[in-house]
Length: 332
Ligand SMILES: NC(=O)C1=CN([C@@H]2O[C@H](COP(=O)(O)OP(=O)(O)OC[C@H]3O[C@@H](n4cnc5c(N)ncnc54)[C@H](O)[C@@H]3O)[C@@H](O)[C@H]2O)C=CC1
Ligand SMILES: O=C([O-])CC(=O)C(=O)O
Image 1 (cartoon, helix red, strand yellow):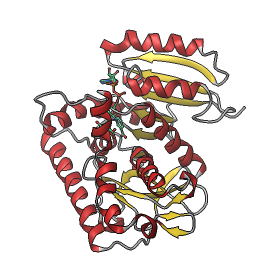
Image 2 (cartoon, helix red, strand yellow):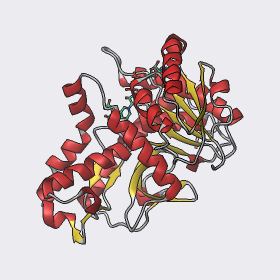
Image 3 (cartoon, rainbow, N blue to C red):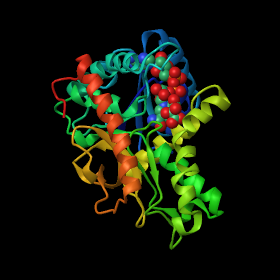
Image 4 (spheres, rainbow, N blue to C red):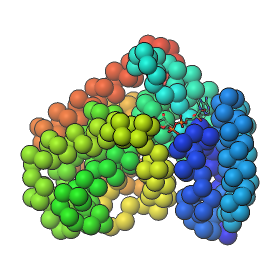
């Protein structure tokens, strides 16, 4: 057995928590030989439900779960965290403006960042799932100045998977043959799922799917998939999100196989003209447990315009949280 790992999950009594935790208990998240301590952070009103999930986790008689802890205190829940998955967020409700949502979530992510900064393990890795995921990442990181910026990511592997699945469906090729897909920008409707460098087996994907489809229906389907799921299910994506979280974490630790890459939201290092200080989805590979941007991809004018539009939205969101005064002392 390897060294035990501490996972802190926020919003642990929520839908994604329920889908994720039992896959952690089965060893799927960190491997069958890595013992895991789970620390669940919940809002006080959901503590009872979280305690119920903890009872069920006990009943899974997992061989990897060492213990399960439930708390509403971030300083307790993040104590010793090696991996923090932040799914606890305030959803948008009727009548709420985007600024209200940003402010409400900043009230959650700010204190969590401060706690992470003080009590998490030195090498903590933070994955933000709760929406608006990119800007929540900005907020949490700004309150954790001692944690290097490259340890914070926003989940866009779900969008990446949605893009791969669309190409598989259109071409009839197996998912395993589809590589080098990229999701750029914000985890929102402005995101740009990009097939310009994608391959199906050894062939350029654009030769098989057609540029018109790649620039039109494909982008719309992937970017609006979250809304389509909500319309169909009456609730947002849950199991596919948990799958994406597990893949994101697995690939971050083991690297992306072959000459493929994945997509993740990370602080821009200025690559591809994206200004530093925003959390943007890029094509990434893993090196020593952090995500590195894949360099040197050509961007034509269509791709450039799409990326710029999504980055403009990210800058607007950053300006909004700045104006609300909710960024911490470690704003990057
Ligand atoms: N990045 C992505 O690809 C995706 C992101 N999401 C987002 O993930 C988030 C969670 O989704 P669900 O689990 O379906 O929602 P949910 O509403 O079922 O669960 C959210 C949980 O967060 C908890 N919570 C609220 N305030 C908290 C606080 N201060 N500390 C700890 N926990 C707190 C709530 O009590 C609730 O149990 C949402 O923001 C959703 O929009 C969902 C799908 C995909
Ligand atoms: O759209 C939403 O609210 C949920 C989400 O992030 C997604 O499914 O991608």
